[in-house]
Structures are given as structure tokens and as C-alpha cells.
Image (cartoon, rainbow over the protein chains, first blue to last red):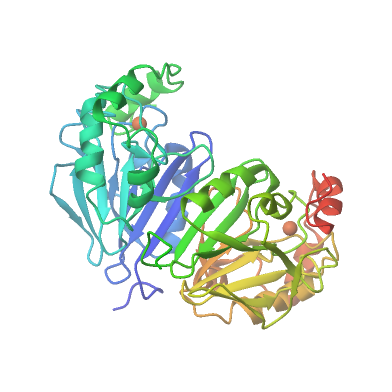
Length: 237
Length: 237
Ligand SMILES: [Fe+2]
Ligand SMILES: [Fe+2]
């Protein structure tokens, strides 16, 4: 039985405007199964409606890490998709229905998301790589011409540098990179661009560590509400 | 000589947050030539930088129509790409370097944009269809689960209904639709979705015309500045 009206994998990028978070839906047109990456609590009803419109059954709600800037939508999505399992890295320290670690694969049929641990922004950051779509979902590990901050949540700039160079820049150069946020309205980048043009990650490791030490960023506005909530899968808000 | 670092067509969606406008870059990796669809004056420097980063030479700056909600970036882009030609529909009444009409093709090598006239939101609205990418760029003719307003700029809801049904819904159902705006943070849709789920365009033509008559929308905030500027290709602001 054909469940999907489409003849090829379903891929949708979405944006939550308040926290400027990018959310992704990946669906298999053969099995009708789907995952969502980094959903936001504020846009749960939009995402539920879209998944239903696309005739997709949400199997996994993946968080690339315990977010500090928004509350995850994974808990809210379960009301509409009760069998959905929330997923976090085993090293994240947060609550989830399923824990993943390096090398594991989230399989929904035609689409398979390979887990690559990319710590540095937090201990439990993962990048999901989907080879059919030639795409990597990096969360806040690698951002467009930037990277996630390393001054909170077990941040470690030396670890972040290694993660990006070993786990992301080793992908084919034409792989697209889909990040967690971008404040300039750019929606995607590629391995080639970041490997060659990212002003931070093209530095030497020593220069990068020094640069990150001197960023002097503001205290994250939502961190005190978001992190405790996200540690328990978004249940606590 | 290989000009591009990529082995397949380059496609980028961008967002201008103030007017919530979606801009698109399509580039041929073989010729290094590119077009931009609906650029915004406020984000010209971002778009120039990205085009240069991607090693693309901007050949055409396409406006799907004379916009009422933002000033086009076509004129600004010429400072960086002096040989770029701005493009409008011959029926738009606006100034441009090149005019297109139904059935014409904008050819940049590996990518070819077929012009489909889709009047109704304005007289001179066009949809660009790129068959390699299985994508249509509809501007404000067809929006996600909505459509452009028809109460200004020669708006004609009966014409809009026919445009969408004859020129867009006749495309294969799995073609993606990239629109001019969306205020819910949804970034793409498909022919199948809009044909089956668009609450306005699934009505009968009579019901649609009646519905559009009763929308009672606010006067467009930027129209008095934007339309005169866009009539002369964004030169007048
Ligand atoms: Fe983060
Ligand atoms: Fe418009």
C-alpha cells in the first residue's frame, strides 16, 4: 500500500521566528515514517498539522543537544503522535526515550540518519548525516560561517574544533549543512563553504581556542528556563 | 575549466526577516552562472557575499512581480554584478532590463527557468518553473495554504484562480513550490499539497471570488513606498 502522495523522500525545513530556530522534517515516502529534528514548543501545532498533511507518522523526535535558547517541542508532539520517541545523545545528561551514540543509525526506511557525536558546544551534541539527501544536520556545533558558543553547558572549544574537523569536514564537500540557527536569513550551507570560508574553523586549533575565549557574548536570554525544561524532554514549562 | 566547487546545481533559499520575503539563488555548477529570484534591497550585501562565496556570476535578477511589501534588490545587486539584467513580465508595467512572457525560458546552462504567466495578484505576475529541480517559484500568486491578495495592483481573483489551476496545478504533484512569503515559518510546499489542501484554491471559482472579496485585509504598510520604487527597478528609494 502506497502511503505517501510523493515519489521521493520528503524533506522540509521550518523556522521558529522567536528563537530563530531551524526545525527539520524528514520523511520516507515508502514507509510513511518520519523524524523531526529540533522542534520548538511554540510551533508544535504547526508541525503536527504539516506532518498530518504530508501523511507522515512521526516516529522519532531528535534533539541535536539540550538547547539553551528554546524549549524543545518533543514532549508536545507526543500528544499527536503517542508512539513517537524522543532522542538525545547518551552523553547529554538529559531525559529522552531513546539515547544514541556515535555510529548508530536512526532508520525510517528509505532515509537513515547516521549519528556523529560532535561535542564542544555541549557534551552531548550530535550531528545527523543523511546520505541519500547528502545532508548533515549539525545543530549548534557548526553554524553558517560561525559555530556554537563554548562558554556554557560544558562548552569546550578544543573539543568543538576536533568535532567539526573530524566528523563534519570529512564529509564530501558538496554535502549540504543544515544548522540550528542563523540570524542573517541564510538557510543552508555546505561542507565546502564552511571548510574554506568559515572564519573561525579555518583558523588553527590554538587560534580558534583563543578566539572563542575572547568572544564575550551576552548571557543567553532563555537559558535559565530552557535548560532545566530541556533536561526533562520539555515536560517542565 | 571547472568554475564551481560543486558537482550539482546550486540552490539556496534565503529570508529577509523584516518583510518576511523569500529570496532564491539558482546557480549552474557547470557554467557558474546564476539567477536570483525576488531579492530585497535590505539584504543585497548578504546576497552579493553569498553569490561570491559560491563562485557564481549573477546573470539575471528576476522579480516575480512588482512587489508592494518590500523594495527589490535588483538595482543594488548591479553594483556588484554590473552585467546582471533585471527581469520582469512584459505585462507588469514596471521598468526592467529584460521583459519575459509566457513560455519563454531563462537559460543559465544546466538550469532553465520556464516562464509561466500567472496574473491575478497583479497583472504581471509570473511563476518560474525549473524542471531539473522539480520546483516552481510562484511569488505571491500561490502561497502556502493561501494566495496573494487581489484587492490592489490590478488584482483580479477570477484571473488568479485560473492562473493557479491552469499554470501551477497542472505541474506534476511532487513538484516543490517555493513562494514569496510565509508568516508561519514554513519554507516550502508542493503541488500535491496545495491542490488538495489549500483552503482557498480547492473552492469552486465562484466561492473563491466571493471569499477573496470578503477578506478585508489591512492597507499594505509599505505599498506607497514600495510600488513606485519597484516600478523603476528599485532605483528610487
Ligand atoms: Fe545550543
Ligand atoms: Fe506581492
